[in-house]
Image (cartoon, rainbow, N blue to C red; front, side, top):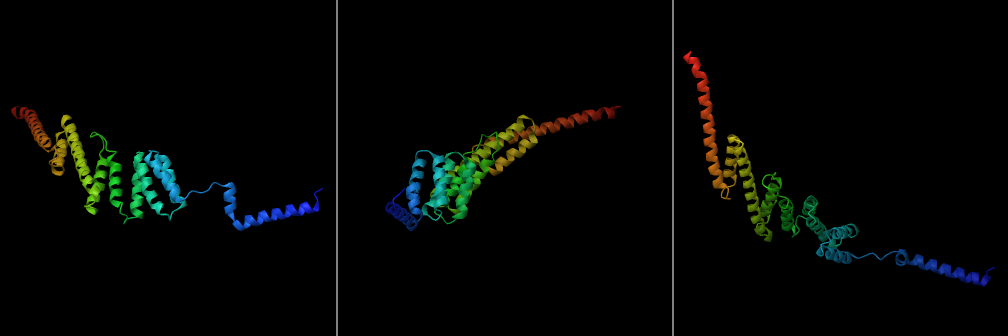
Length: 244
C-alpha cells in the first residue's frame, strides 16, 4: 500500500505537469510529439534548391505547400510562378500553360507578366510538330508572342518573341507549301492553287514565296491542259453525231 505522504507528492507532481501543459497550450504537445513546422523561408529555400538540382516534381510539392500553408506570405506569389516553371521544365505544357494563365489572371499588374505571356507562347512552341502534321500549336504560339508584342513592346522578352514569331511564320508557310505540293502530286490542281495562293498572300518573303509562285504557274498550266483535253474529248464524242 502506497504511503499517504508519497501519494500526495505524486498527486501534486501530476497536477503540476497538467497545469504547465494547459498554460502552454499546444506548443508543449508540438514540442513533445510533433515535428517542428518549417517556416515559409525554409520551405522556399528547399524548393529553390530542388528546382536548381532538376528535382522539379519535389520542388512543385514544396511550392504547393507554401501556397497552402502560407497563402499570405511573400513567397506564396513567387511559388505560383515557380510551380508553372517546374511544370514547364517537366514538359507538362498543358499544366504549365494553365498555371501561367492563372498567375496572369490573379496578378495582371505583376512585373513578371511579360515573362508569363512569353512562357505561354513557349508551351505551344515546344510542341510544334513536323510540317506534315497539324500546325495548331504553331498558330497558338504565334498568337501569344504577338500578344506580348502588343502589350509589352519594350519588354526584354519582346525581342525574343519577334524571332519566335518569324519561326512560326516560316513553319506555317512550309506547311502550306507541303499541302500544296501534296495536292499537286495527286493532280488535284484546284486545291493546290488555293494553297499556293494562300501562302503567297499571307507568308511573303519567307523563303517559300518564289517556290509557291512557280508551282502556282505550273498548277494553272496543268489545269488549263486538263480543261483543253476535256473539251477535245467532248468535241470528239459530239463530232460523229454531226457526220451521221
